[in-house]
Length: 404
Image (cartoon, rainbow, N blue to C red):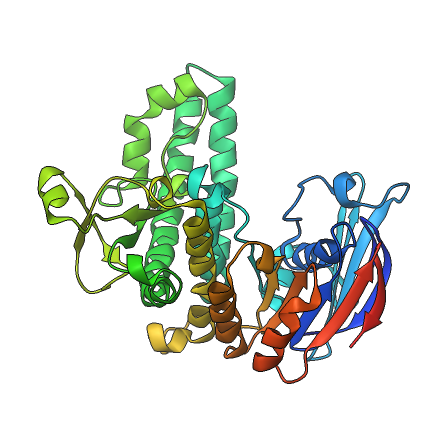
């Protein structure tokens, strides 16, 4: 848990130094810096902003770098400095480290921001990252395999972009890379699949709470990105000509996806369709239920999508904190986990009172730290119902004016 947070030259936060509690509420008007404070915590944990990829977009004007420093409850310290040229300096306990994953392990951070619709309606990357966040924090062997896979994939794609026809030497080199990709892919899929299956009861519970009328109709499925019944290197060899024409690798772990399906509750509609089979449903994880090919994003209203996104993210926390109930505790590849930090950005502007109440009551029961932003202090009475000593920070133009 973060005990003290220091931020320098990030957007309009010139110098911020605050002592935090289990629950922290940042109140201020639009542009006051409250979202930037959440962004700073996310940057420290993930090495990137959830608003912009380029550091020069969030480094304060006329400054060379933005810095975030945190002291945790176990007295360890984390720091990140992002420079305008995208150079990154990372420190753990005053010692320079060279992998962001080291800080990420120390500070698991989950952003619950249902205002973002991209997860449901655009590319697979954000949905895949949703699963990989869980796998990273729960499976010791996942990250090395993922890094090795990414390195080989980059080499393969670089060769595919340069050449339309390969020499015998290049073909032999590609075959070696494909064998390596295949070995890493099998392990990555194994990790993802086991965590995905463990995730389902928690997703089911969140859907039942937030979208109870649709609990029988929403299901979650995982697509590995390739046919896991056949070694990946065999499939890559069969598709080599097409990959050469396109200049990139079309199948593999990097194309994995999570889908939320809509299953019609109308028996007539079910008989008239030719549904696929979802591996696991939100209603009953032990039964295979038929689902329509229709994506839930194409059926739900905007408000319902917000609740669905909230359910997806919220359901990850109890799994992360109660993994021994979902998976065999005898496995030796579980990670020891730090206290998760949950970031809630302007949730009152996106969710109704009932959903906010469910969200806060769930978080209050979990051993996690919460930072949330709000335009007004109208949310404070509800927060006081669940946290005995929340800290309240009032912000204006990047300065903390008052704390409670």
